[in-house]
Image (cartoon, rainbow over all chains, first blue to last red):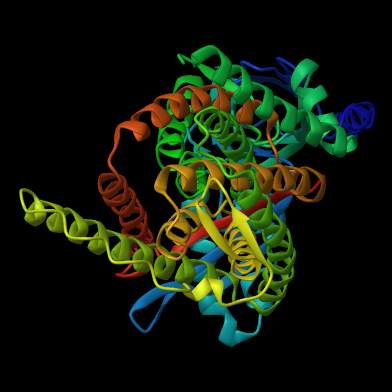
Length: 257
Length: 311
């Protein structure tokens, strides 16, 4: 992981320098790196944004609105569905959702459904299921079950806090200045978090920019994770020693006879 | 106070973990069982990913069995020779178990087999022990005051003595063939590897009922066997699945070794039938819990069973 960081930061730099269009959107973050230490319980990252009006662009009467999404590292999520087999309930069907964000947040100042049409929402990938193949590309008999599985995925991920829909996370400080609050839960995975910010006015997307941050283990926790991965036999030996020594010490400390 | 676990990759409450370790350690010391069948579900329940929960439980079990085994060793209530024979069988059984585990996973029967064997094993052993211990308690009550009837002479040859290769287990007051003992070890190792448990709750009743070994020797010997099995398990889990969390293990162990001390002490004050009745009730309770999981309509038919982040 540590060796990856320079590349991730480089990737971030590239993401932020997309060519300019009529509305300039300048983004900056309160931090580029969330460091995981022994007392880590999650972190708050704030994105600050400034919308710069181009003189040549059409002057709009309607105010700017902001929609932001945060995508954590991609991974596979397996959902099981229980079914009845005689008197008992067991896993009857399973669905693997491959390569979707393992953390996803949709941030706005009011419900996104009121701001843009469904087509726009789908184009901006405002739902976790937009990272899956569209339902209508699947064989017809599978569609109903897939839809059911996808609904369960969204519901369960939201219950776990790995899918956040927060229509109060964005604050317009000035008509062209805003903040977006991103809460990284303690159990969110380590890796790269990409933030996509779109400027919307009267349902029209004017500009989309990207930024991001890295969540990684540092210090002792990084050393432990590294040892577990790259020096597994030594790590195993250390673990056995810890167990046996502590057991022995306890026996010694508590003996009465 | 929250502490971040670097392999489980989530923060959890330190005191909750210490308390859980202590509670399971107490039961482990009391009954000579590893307590894996209690700790692993506990850890999964509070959010630890299943592979990490299974792998790290073995650290806790190893530590509490060291403490317990040493205490029984000093009280001369541990049969090293019997333990060694059981372990020899156990290694073979664990090897076969791992092969079976992977075969069943490929065929997609693993869930079914694990759940059904848990329920069947726990319920049947629990019921048998429960009935037997209540029976012997009533018998004692009835016999109180009456002259003690002459103990029937032991049969000439018990079933397990009919095999060749006899060995004398001094501590266990047992003279038997090694074949049934190795077979028992193999079965325990096999079941342990498939279900991810130490197998103490199988060893203890088997030695008490099948081989008629005194209860206090059984517990110490079972702890020794569990310790060896768990050391092998830690190595396998740390190298193959890389799911052992040393920090989580350390916290659980600190709670566990303290709990185990009190468990062993309490265990020494219990009478044989009381001991068997309590263990039977514990095993039954866990069995009922597993049965509830599969019987009756689940609250939510959908569950997220795995989240695998790409690295």
